[in-house]
Amino acid sequence: MNTPAFKKETFRDDYTFRNSPEAIRRFPFPFAEDEYMYSVNIEQHVSTNPGSVFEHAIDIDEHYIAECEDRRLTLERDPTRYIALPHMMDAQWDMVELIMESLSADYPQWFELTKNGDQWHWVNKPLEIDQTFTFGDTSTLPMEPFEYISRQVQGDWIIMDHRDDDLFADMGMVTSQADWSIAFDAGMSFKEWHGPVPQANEIGIFDRALKYLLHLQYGSPVRRLNWTMTVNPRLDTSPEEFPLWGPDNASVTPENVGEKVHLRVELQALFRLPRSNAIAFSVRGYLISLDELVTYPKWAKRLRRVLTNLHPDLSEYKGLDLYRQTVIDWLEPLEDGAELSLGTQPE
Amino acid sequence: MQRGYWIRSKPLYDSLVWQTPAVAHLVIAGGEGGIAVLKLFQQMYPKDPIQVLYTDLATANKNYSDILQQIVPEELELCDSEESLLNNLEQRLKDCTMGTHFYVAGSEAFMWHVLQKTRAAGVQDVDVQKELCGTLARPVYCVHCKTITRDVHHNVFPCSNCGRHLFVRDHFSRRLGAYMGVMVDAEEPGNIPQIEEVYP
Image (cartoon, rainbow over all chains, first blue to last red; front, side, top):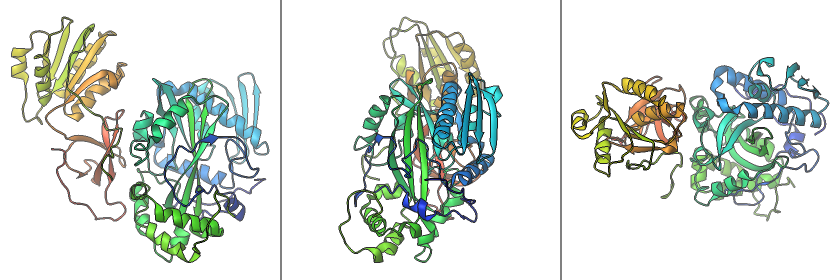
C-alpha cells in the first residue's frame, strides 16, 4: 500500500468503520479450500506481494489512527487490558526496539528513529508524537516502555517468556481480542492459555506448535492466519465487555446481515526477542463486512462452503451459533456450485 | 462439546505423599484438608523436620484440630482462622530453605490462597503437592467486575459483587487462583439456563 489517507472512523457506538476498495483487495482472506479445520499452518514471515498485508513485518494501513484511538478508549475504561509481570522489563525494551525499528525502516514517511548511543529520538507523525528518551531507562518515558510503544501500533501483542521448555503469557496489550482476557490468562503456560480451544488439542496442534515455537530463531519470524466472525466492526470483543456486545449476536436478521456481520481475520506473527529471549506474538485483526467481502464472488462462495461444513464445536467456540445459518442463507444466491481455485486470492 | 474435551488449564489434584529425602517438610491444611494430613501420617514417617499448620474452617462439614493434636507428634500449630494461618505461613516461609517440600490440602479456594503465599516466596505451583478435600466448591473470578466469589457450588450463580449471573467455566488461572465466570445471559438477557448444584 502506498500512502493511505488515515481514516477517521469508529469501532464502537455508531460504527463508522469501512474498508476502501484497496483495503478490500488486500484483505487477508484465510480460506484456501472449501473446508476449514485447525492446523499449525505456520510459514516464514517474509515480505511477499508488495501492497499486501505480508509486505512488512508490522502492517500499517488506513485504519491506523482510528485503531490506536480505539485502544486508548478501551484502556481508559479498563487499564487491566495491559499487563506486564515484573520479570519482563528486558522484553519491554525489546518491544520498543522491534516496533520502532521496523516502523521507521518500512514507513519512513511516517516514522523516524534516530539513535545516538542510548539516546533515542522517536517521531510518530500520524499520532503527532515526538519523544527523546534513554533506551533502557524507564524514567525517561511517560509510562512503561511496552505500554508506551504498544499504544502506537495496531493489533494485540502478547509477549511470552521462555522457560522450563514452555512459553508463558507474562506480558500483553490486548484490546481487540476475539473473546479472551489477558487479565485472566496472564502468567499461563502455552497449553493453559489455549486450553479452551476445542478440537485443536485433540489433533495435537498445541504440542506441535509449542515444539516449533521453542526453536524460533531471532531474525526469522513466522506467521499464520486465524479467523472468527464478529457482529458490528467492534475491536473490543473482550469477555470483560461481553454484556455490552453479546446482545449484538442476537441482532442479525436477513435484512442487516450484509452490513452487520464481519469476517475477522487475525494475522498472527511471532518474533524471537534478542535481550529477553522472549517471543512476541502479534495478533493483528482485519475486519471486513459481508457486503464488502461479496464484491469478490470467489470469496463469497468459499466462505459459504466453509461455514456450511464447519465443525459444530468450532462454531460454538467462535460464537457463531446465533447467526451462522442466517449468513449461509444470505450467501446462497451467490452460490453456483462452481469449482473454486485453490488459494486465498480474490479472483 | 464432545466426549474427551477438557480444558487444560483446569488443575488436577492428587493425594499427598511424603517426598523424601528433603531438607524439611511443611504441611498446610484447612478444614476438611485435615483428613489428608491424617493420611500422610499413616505413611512411612520421614526423618527430616516436619511442620504442620492447620486451621478449622466454619465452612467445613468436619474439622480435625482435636484429632490432629493427638496424631501429629511434633511441630503442629493450630491457627484460629484462615487469615492467621496465612500470616503464620508467611512468617515461616522466610526461614524455609531450598529443599523444603510443601504439601497443601483443603478446598480449592483455601489451597490457592496458600499457593499465593508460597509463590510470593518463590515456590512454583508445580512443586507443591495438592490434595482437594471435602468439597468441589470453586473460587470464581467475575471477568466483568474482577471480583472473586469464594465457594461456588452451582453451574450458574450471581456474582457476589456485581450480581450478574455468571456461568462457571473450567478455564483456571493459577495467578488469580480462580475459575473464570462469564455472564450467562449476555446475548439474550434473562435467558438463564437451569441452575444446578454441580460442585457440591
